[in-house]
Image (tube, rainbow, N blue to C red; front, side, top):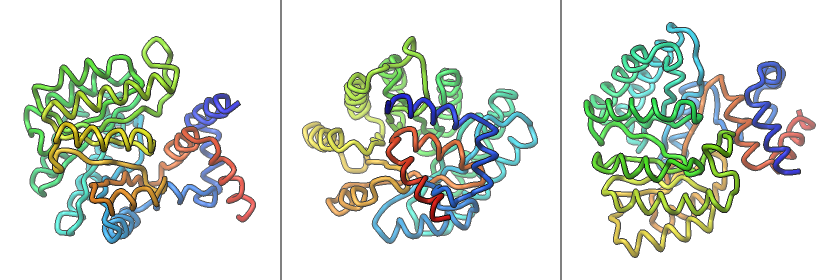
Length: 307
């Protein structure tokens, strides 16, 4: 039953009619639990609050699968403005971007042009940009673009994401190892066929540990993005055993999910970075968060009743 609910929520995340219905209710659906707001200033306030709690941040201006070049350029310009807004603020924050929002499905050269503009501004402002990994259809081209940008801007200003539910993820980390890449390691949130992804959670968990170990030993920086306490405990032990320097790794979690755990880890002395999404295109992200834990649907229904 839970898997059926998860599949339904993932389907709804891509359904335009459902999105139009949801946007009528806006944040009354409870999206504010996972998305602090629609504007850049909402994001600034969220980062400031996290900073006060001892937490770092990464910002994601929500949006994906753009199909017009002008929209892609506007998205890139907004990313540049976001970097500029934080340039003189004393917060540990960087930017996460999706290539389909920046024109990847329109023209790869357009996407590269937009990414170069963003990462160049990040370098000028002393910030870092992470290329989010999307669905499997965009996996190889995303890695190829990452390699090109890494060659131009270096590890200090560009990184990407590897998803543990893909069979190929360990091979990808081995192939990237000579670059000493800065990688965020996640389990994966898109629905993929069993021909390319592990269908069973236990297999995803085992592969997640495998790729964490590979990346920790690669010499590149490692962001372990999980709320799974068993894996967190395992990672703490493994980092200690491997004597990984504190500045070479961190935990990452999503805004609004397990905030007590986030603060507990920070109090223990671990670096914890929170993924902060914002913007008007919150619907797809919100539905994917519900799909990861269908029990949260009850929270949404309560929000609707209160509204």
